[in-house]
Structures are given as C-alpha cells and as structure tokens.
Image (cartoon, rainbow, N blue to C red; front, side):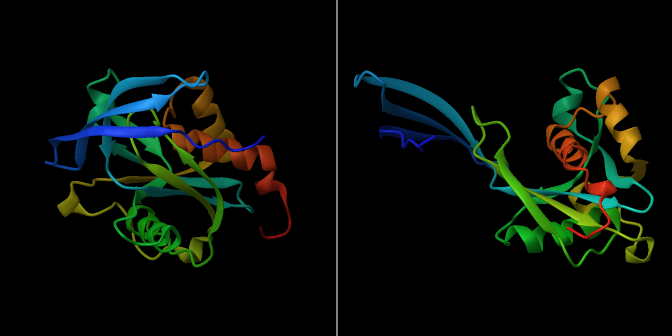
Length: 200
C-alpha cells in the first residue's frame, strides 16, 4: 500500500491553554478525495512524544508492570489505579535513553539493552503524542532500587511482577485496561518471546 500525504491549508491557529501542556484550536481546509476543499476545525493537545517498555524474564515467564493513580480515568468511572507498562514523556531526550531512565525510575530495574518493537499514535483524533514501544529482558540482579517514581512529580508507583499468563488473564477480566500495556503484552505473547531460548 502506498503512503498518502494530506493536502492541508491551515487558516488559523488559536492557543486555548498552555497551563500544563499546549491545547490549540486549528481551522484548516482539507482536500477531500473528490478534489473539493472542506473547512474543518479541531482542538489538538500537544504534550510531546513518549516511550513505554515491557520488562520480561524468560526463565520465570514473568513481566514487570506498575500500578499508579490516573486522574483522567478516575473521572471516567474507573477506580483510578491503572496497571501499566513503565512509560514517560521524552522531554527532549532520545526515546531509548529516556525509556532506560524511566524504567529505572518507575520499576527500580536498570536495563542496559532494550529493543524497539514499533511506534504508534495512541489517540490520533485529538492528541499529537506518538509512543515508542520497547522490550527488555530483566534479571533479579538488575534491581538497582525499589522504584516507585519521583515523589516531587506526584508519582506513587507500585511495582508488580506477574506471570505473562496472569497479565494476559488480567486483560480478559478487565483488570488491565491500559492500551499501551495491552499492546506490549499481546506482542510478546504473539511472538512467543518468553518461549525462545535465544536473546532477542
């Protein structure tokens, strides 16, 4: 399939908020498939790009996940505590360096070798953010600290070690509802990564 580049004319850009990250309202003309130009408006939230990582242990058939409070899901009817793969915004770092630092901050595991598996836009209708997805194998000796995140940034993170089977069952039962985490868990299950003898 060939790629296609959108034909766009941006007419007006208005900043609605820059209190935390940046929310803008765009007025633009988009050329439709039939050649007609149609005026549209969209609000776009720009918080930068991010990265996420799933740590796994092939011998124990386990993965490292985190549990932390997420206010937006709380006000949408969830209990507020999401089980997730470690993740963070890039903050002007390259994705690989950022995710190594984030993994240690959140989980306490210091990983030296990571593998990028894919990139994805997680909410393309309204948020600019692109996520870089990584995997890394961990060993018990890689534990450098208790993890838990940075208190000054409001992080209060619980570190969980689950078998892959438990994590996949958590998706089926609704215990794990975070999109990036589901994608990484299904990826290692689909690829049979925990059942390979060789390192990836």
